[in-house]
Image 1 (tube, rainbow, N blue to C red):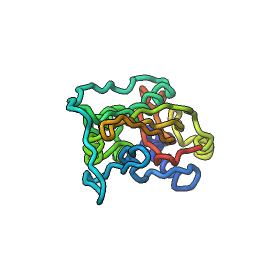
Image 2: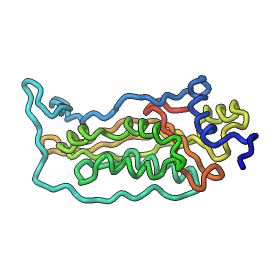
Image 3: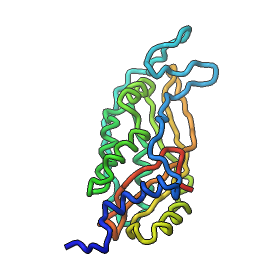
Image 4: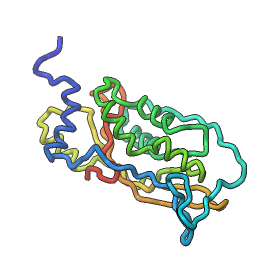
Amino acid sequence: MTDPATPDRPRRLRLIISLAAAGLVLLAFIGVGVYGLLTGPAGRPAPDPGGTSRPGTMTPTPGGAASPSTPTLAPLPATKDPEVFARALAQALFTWDTFTTLTPQDHRAVILEAADPSGEETPGLIGDLDKYLPSASTWRSLQEYRTAQTLTIDRLWVPDQWDQAVEAADGQIADGLIAFTVEGTRHRTGVWFDQPVTSEHPVTFTMFLSCPPATEQCVLLRLSQLDNPLR
C-alpha cells in the first residue's frame, strides 16, 4: 500500500517542469533545430539544405566511390554513477556519422533505452531529442557530404540553479534526481568538392537524470533546450 504522505514518483518528476514554469529553473524544453549542413571553405558556396543548387552555384558531389560502413552502437552504461552516465549520454547525443548504414532512429533508440522506465517522461524526451538529432531528411542531405560529428566535453557540473530548485522544492524532489550541465565543442567533418573540411561550434545543454535511490540505475528524464542550459 502506498504511503499517502509520500508523493508518488511521477508527481515528483513532473515537479521539474513545474519549477521551470514557475521561473525557479530557467529552462525551456522547446527549441529550434540546430543542424545545418557543414559550410564549405571561405569563398565557396555552402551546400543547399534542400539538395538543390542555388542560382549560379555548383552542386558538390561526394568524393570517391566508397561505400558506407556498418558500425554498431553500444548501449549506454548500466551504472549508478551519475557523472559516468552523464558523460556517456553526452557523447551518445552528439557522436554520429552519416556515412554509415545507421540512421537517426538508431541513435535515438540507444538513448530511449536508457530513459525513465516508468515512461512518464518519455513523450517529453522524444520531443527533446528532435532538437538534438538530425531529422531523416537532414541526415540524407548530410550523407551527401559524408558528415560526421563528435563532441569534446570541456566542462560537466551540477548547476547552481538545480541546487536552488531542489532547495525551493522543500523535499518534493526525490533523492537521486540530479541535473548536469555540459559545456563542450561540437566537431564536424565532411567532404566538400572532394576535399576534407571541418567545423567547430560551442554547445551547452542540461540533462536531467534519475539515479539511485530514485531508480535502480541512472536513467535519462529530460533534456534542456540546446544552448539554453541551467547555470
